[in-house]
Image 1 (cartoon, rainbow, N blue to C red):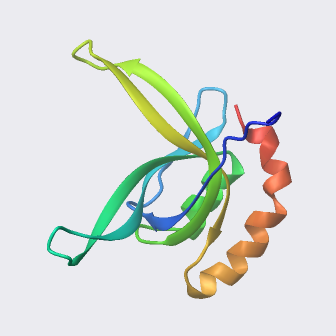
Image 2 (image 1 turned 60 degrees about the vertical axis):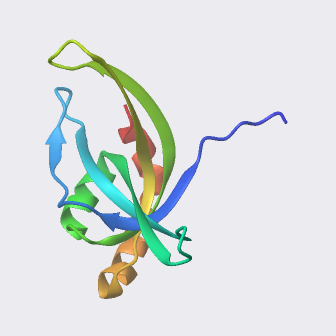
Length: 132
């Protein structure tokens, strides 16, 4: 196997409205929680829903589009890659975090989806220059 790939593709819902911040060098960024669901049977044979929460990071034009087109609960298809980072919290404890750096997304909710699909896909190539 000569090529190793880091690709994540999820369908889920935004856990909050997107807030876009600007870095010191002027790049836009938005961090938002994203929920996906899975169903399985419990020990009594009943179907139960399990919700998984993911941390998404949108950079550049994608962050702006997310803020303009989406709100809490919006259903999205996202594609990106896993990014690992660590930091030391205020109690001097080292923490490790896994984020998904979104490279493209499609809104899957109703009328917004039709307009957003074309816009987001058309600018995916342009977004590469916005990544840090």
